[in-house]
Amino acid sequence: MKLLLLASGTGSLAQAVIDAGFEIASVVSDVPGAQVLDRAGAANIATKVIPFRKPREEWDQELISYVQSVSPDLVVSVGFMRILSSEFVSKFKVINSHPALLPNFPGAHAVKDALAAGATQTGCTVHWVDAGIDTGQIIAQVEVGVLPNDDQESLHERIKIVERKLIVEVIKSLESKSERS
View 1 (cartoon, rainbow, N blue to C red):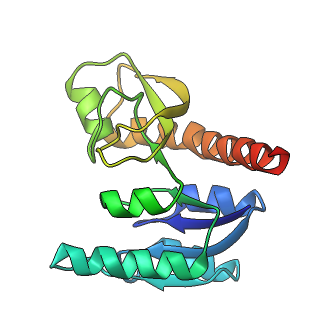
View 2 (view 1 turned 180 degrees about the horizontal axis):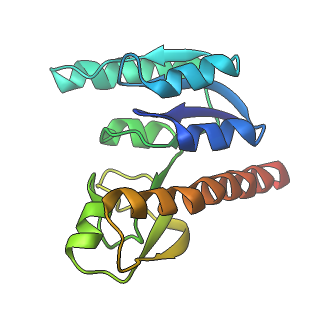
View 3 (view 1 turned 90 degrees about the horizontal axis):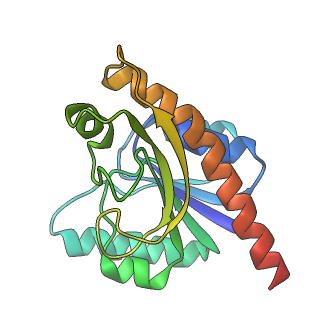
């Protein structure tokens, strides 16, 4: 199964996928100079930077055109901080890793929101991406307890540990299902 990874930041989730040995056709980032691009380059994986710009529709079309040119079996959003257009998610199979137990705490500030709400449990979710914001069908979740002394950074780091394992397990499961069909 050929993957295309979407990422915006340091790339620790992308690195977990890279280290698992999947066939990764390309890593796409919307942030020039993002550390994830260095990680991909070190693994001899093609990279593409498509900086976000307005009008949004032009950016969407450039992203769609590039992904179509790569023709992945699965697009994996691993820390990609952009909402994908409904056209994009209708053209490609896309999964996302999210640092909360959806449907709780959707959006870009999930860890901060969980702490602000006084949650005692949070975690991570891998889900199919649809046209909504973190509303797609849940594939798998893992709980992470919130400790009394947690701040946003410490909680997010503990979530990332289980998130890296979960994204790899989900991709392996999807790969296995695609081989059987």
